Length: 534
Image 1 (cartoon, one colour):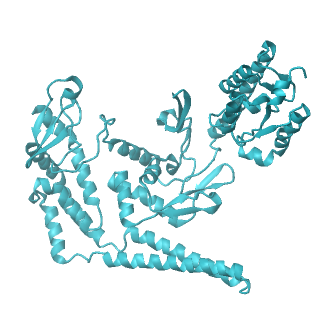
Image 2 (spheres, rainbow, N blue to C red; image 1 turned 60 degrees about the horizontal axis):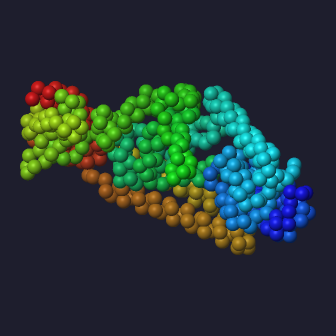
Image 3 (cartoon, rainbow, N blue to C red; image 1 turned 180 degrees about the vertical axis):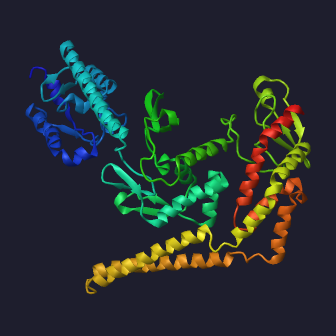
């Protein structure tokens, strides 16, 4: 009691209250009662004014975002606090930085610390030593808790039994199993993404196609798994995540991302969700559950996406085909240094240039070649490879155009089935309620009307899509396509890509584009040989 002086009693007593998680706030109520009870102890010790600081309920003591603790330090520095009360050191801090900062400030202004075991004055060497040991034990205790829990999670993950959440297209069964969503609309929407990627070989083109066709993709409801999925037009990252998530290849993966810690303005910053290479994943179990694609397809998709990169950091990747008058922008490499060639347009002519050596070493550019000569050589090689397949491509274009329904129409048909079910369900609910109970009947009637409006909207979309459907090809158009397939050389080299795009749009398909692009990329090696000899 001699450590408490009249000077301490003239100031306020601060009771600091903290619990680590939201779950503790709900279920560990006894700890809250013990901590709030410290206000009575402060009054018993002689303080008339007691301030309770409970801003950090639900926050970890080892974290960096604790407004309540910062408020406590500010009050101590102002000289308004005579004593800080907490049930133990771990409530005040679980990291050495915060704990020793608190002790240092309390020692400077003469504030004492009170817990359930005693009263400590940081200005006394023995008390300061004891407080330091308490803080060290608190920090060590948190490290042990984390180590045990993380090792338990890793042990479950090694068995493939740690299922914290599942991607759209799957459902969690029990505590440790996942299976495909039985909803056929969900399955077909997910499968459509992989089908179109196999056709386009570009995540961006798949995204654009889905948006243009008005096809919605399923997403996990933010209100929890029990609320199923919600349907919305996809953003690019949704398409990319579907294509790069190993769960759709039937694989269980754990440790795909990590955290990186940096110091910014003297404070720790944690960057979460940093992707790791596949060979550094903690756990990878193939054939763990039902898949949408095979593992080989998944690896090919990853390789195609990586090769499509065209940024500054992708100098060693192949890159996607680019737009422009020239045939192969973004696909050619210098035969001397291996860097990608830049395209320069001047007037009606274009040139392929390599500026890599000049930018990196200040020397002359490696090579500069007229686009006319390169295009002529590439067009000749492409036409030679395509010629035997020309008739087959024309037949496929005709068959695709004359197909009964498109993928977009099938997805809208599934949406219509789901909407009609919602109407029937809403009507059954409305019929089951007592009409006199208007508080309930009015709400159910509103839901029924909304479901009917949704059906009417989808039916209108289907009708509009059928109206936009191009008419069947006439005999002259069929003959024109067959002639085009038989004599591809009649297409001017610089119009080859545009002609293939026209064929794809006319047939409501883009197989011609994908085929033309794949053949153009297959000729890249031959083009590089030509360049190195030029």
